[in-house]
Image (cartoon, rainbow, N blue to C red):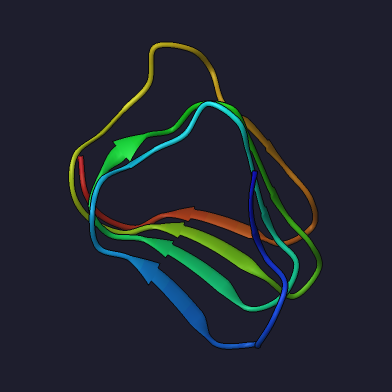
Length: 77
């Protein structure tokens, strides 16, 4: 599990991120800018965001996207 639970700023991953487990944004923003896989479960709590902003993303299975926070695909392919 990848969990962002400290700080209201943005934590960026500028390398490929291959996920098949759980990702949770509890505070601030998680930014994926290096591509990878969009699989497993992604959850953003109120006032947080998970952003896929660059790189090449793929998925062999459907990802679960949940929570009242923002989950955005703003770039990449």
